[in-house]
Length: 298
Ligand code: GUN
Image (cartoon, rainbow, N blue to C red; front, side, top):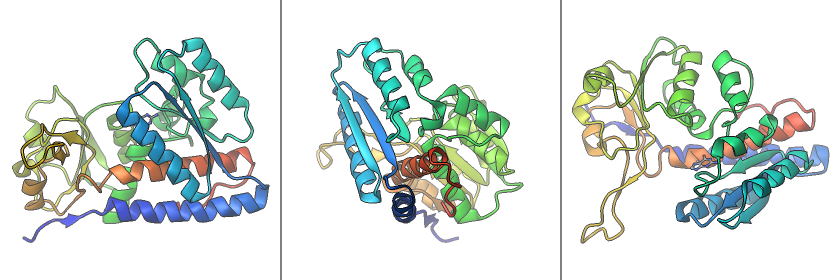
């Protein structure tokens, strides 16, 4: 068997962003305003600053208005909640994203709970988690929705396929398992206490790895021909020829490439999908707020 196909998440994300941009322009024509996303960053976390900058640029490129709120690390819970409430009422703001993690001392759950569920484009509010659980329309977290898009693009109908999701986080693993179940896959949600993980993974036509442990999933665990989605982004310790440390996923990529049918690389696989889906969710929110039909073909 030849080498696995590399799933080009960067190219897929660019296509999605272009479709969002076309819809955003039509929305502006129809309503006289651009869709709007408010991004709130509290404190100085370096990775978060990079993410927030990238989100702002992606919005502008897609014709979505970006409202950035950068607050000092000492911001009180009351100040942050006051800002969220103001954004909830702001008619120019369709989506609200509070970048996580928040500085120690701020209660993330309380802040997320304060966001209007119909502006919660991250899909983190319990109302949206509940909507997903019972099959109602709502916002789905961006990363797992992006993974589902890549899987359906690669495999078409997922009905009857065996899927193993590794990792049970609220942001990726749990919603991923629900999305795959809704797509009629047979889903196993594996985690740190799963016994014989290699054997469980070996049954899967679809493997989604979202554990945050570098190269944990080995090539010889994978069923030949399986489709592997690697959500992990882990930086290895620096070496002489890689002073910043190499970025690797949760899957041992070189090994998996020999066995899998298709696999997402790190970087350039799932990563670029997250922001593209955030723009898509913001566009959907804007249509709902304007009383327009949901945009099609996204
Ligand atoms: N921190 C890391 N990823 C995310 C994300 O997708 N949304 C938010 N709000 N914070 C994050």
